[in-house]
Length: 331
Image 1: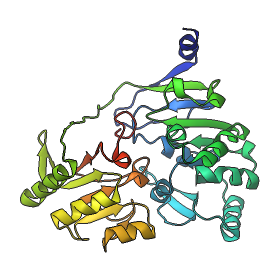
Image 2: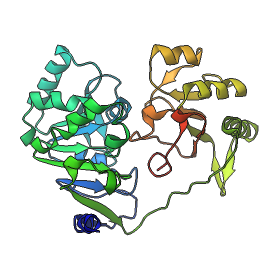
Image 3: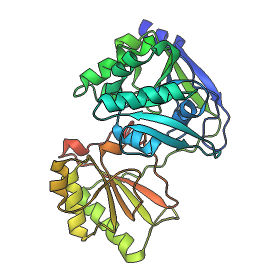
């Protein structure tokens, strides 16, 4: 009972009166865990666009590639909805003397500094810059718990350093439940966005003992009619979220799809190249195709733009890699 009362006292709401689904704020709330509630509402954009020096720590390389528009570490140009743009340094992958030189040059030549890095690079950044001059955004905060079993060192690097910054904000639309909050964050305030206008996500659950056959049947419907219709909405592009390259290939071969038909976003490594048997590995920056297959490399944080896209989350109980959590993965 005492624990529940404590959590209630430590939670604060922020009224969001937005009719377009975006956060219109000059800055994110400070020194808190921020539940933005709505995905794709521009929370990361606030930190990138304002005039504060920010370091943004994210869970995946693909998220950085998607934001800065380049596949390697370095300076990218991030464009915003109002037509303005900003130089942002993306830090991921292998760290070497050339990357360090370019990063220090970026810091020295830009008045407002925006650095976006993967979780594992945060300790190195703290050696190169004075953290007390930067605000820190830890994006996709729920991944700290979700990934800890296999990324312990990277996540500990975030939790060991976040209090060294001018301010910090752990942000997610699907935050860690209070019972499982890391002990080092127990005294950190929870802030929740209270949206006056909020479009509810619609999820249609279909249960089958042959999920990949059902996915293939959906693809056949697109081919037959050129589109599918769900709740009166016509879709000409399909986005399949499925965390198994092997199963993706099985669907592609069953439906006899070519590289012209598909975009496959997965880890670009020799193992996946061998599994794909000639199918091309793409990224979130690649041109959209009629059928887009996305693994957990890009489940969260990356933006996709489609006028008619429909999302299909394919989950198979017999394959642990494809299991999708209804409360975190699907939103």
